[in-house]
Image (tube, rainbow, N blue to C red; front, side, top):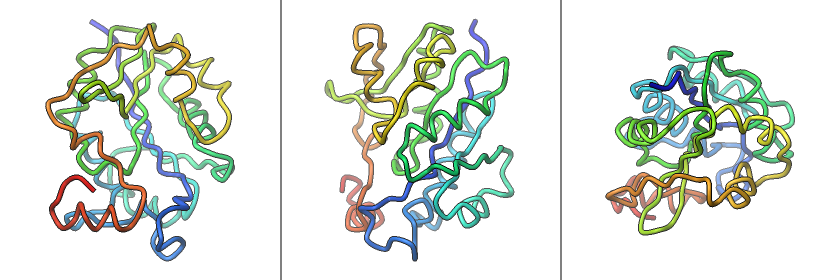
Length: 203
């Protein structure tokens, strides 16, 4: 039996492709009456994750107010404009000392739910483990890294997050094939978000 895995919700980004920009950051876009950041945090909290840490950055006060009543910890990434890797490092610095791993959850996948998170946790096999979901051979998020890889994650820079490390360590990555693409679909533009809200499911 493995130890706890921390959930790190990455909610700090500028979302430059999201047309409403400063007026409505993507993290605050509402799907089924709920902001994307709150939706992601609730999915994480109702899963088997040991704890949930949300990393804020752009529009931090507005984002944090969306989840202030939830049982999680919010940490601020002051260098959010430098890319997602900074949020990964910020989140890692905040996970519990006894965590055997960390799952990095983006806020722009409205189909991600606790059942999918728990499937990924079920494949996690300790500090040396790396787990990602796939659909028809295409990898997606969230990625889970065992503690043995934390130092490598802390060396990352830029806006690709953990993707460079996943490419480098491809043979070591355990893939969990999902039955549907929906949990992996991400929304990058307001048009894609509207398509999801209108019920197409796949922007």
